Image 1 (cartoon, rainbow, N blue to C red):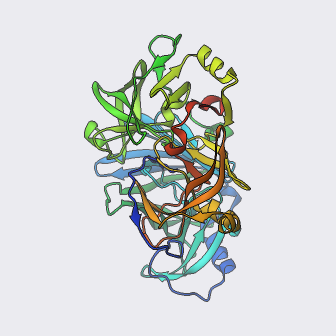
Image 2 (image 1 turned 30 degrees about the vertical axis):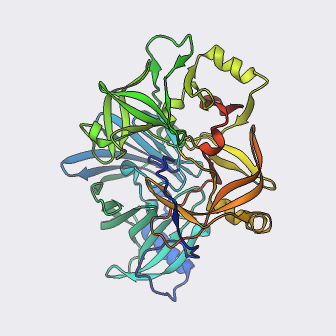
Length: 504
């Protein structure tokens, strides 16, 4: 969540209550689509012949690419083994990785911090790996229509589970994919392929351009050249996750550290971060997957990324830190990277943020007053179980950067009958504006709500509804638990052990 959310999907919310009529709109798709008389099976067969996806000789291979952006030329290495792959590139002396493992996309930033990616287009210019370079599952494909680019092309929508929705333009004359389009919130990513060449019986693109547009901003355009394709065995180690680097205290952390945080009236939490000797307030946000820094504080930002020689939070220091360059009021956002490797206590009642020593963390979780909640952090933010009576899910994001309680479209669709029967509309719909786009929500009153130690009745919750807005965000989780729920608790986040503690 998305990232990006930072890139990633930061859940830092710039909230706006804009009254709007409920709109029943179809999901976003590219413009200029006409009906087609073709059959999906025939289109996919043409694509399979052209791409060589059934060619055993290409099932394992290595490729070498070059990313070009202005005067930058970045070598990229790709290793493919069946449906799994990994790309690696060195940018500004740090290695960035991305790939697919067990059917799930993942991303590793320059700090080696890895998380899985679900439908996230935010802030990741360095890992735009085309879908059409890998085999397609016909069960995830829908034939949408056809278009002219200017040559006639079929348009196939691909909806792989736990991945981005992608629109593929399949050239009717050759069967090759000549364009990919992905869209989420304010961002649309278009990949245009050309310079096709034969490789055995396959027709592979040797060049493509990536137009990564965020509200008309094309500064992240990348030109990609395929320098070599080398079929041959790929070892499992070549697809492994990278080694992570963590914020580390100067001396060993023998005692608990108070970060002297500041709690705003809207429950945002600011902590002081030293960026190469310049101290700035950063929002402490469990809903963000990467460190984000406003470009005004950076000297070397390009392609939405930068390297900071020294990033320090109190005694915790990360040398040569990878950060996202993201406009944010002259400050930054700190989240997943900082929570790894330590237990962090966010005490809303006493207005403090502590990094607990091992002994204090063990005592806190052993305290009978502490309700321990399982938290899945595989996606870069804590996902927990929450329930509105019989309507329940295991993918609610605990987000110290969002103010309200929401349920997202997948949850609303899954429990539509329960919501219609037992929830009561509370007010007119409004738009909640995030940095990356918006979600239109209908406020309801739900009979009950339960999440760990948080329980209540007659709870106000915003349910995401269809909208005609082009910047609508597709958040793949069940919902967001924001500070209007969290601010009554003392919370302890222990990402390494997949848990959090809650105390009133």
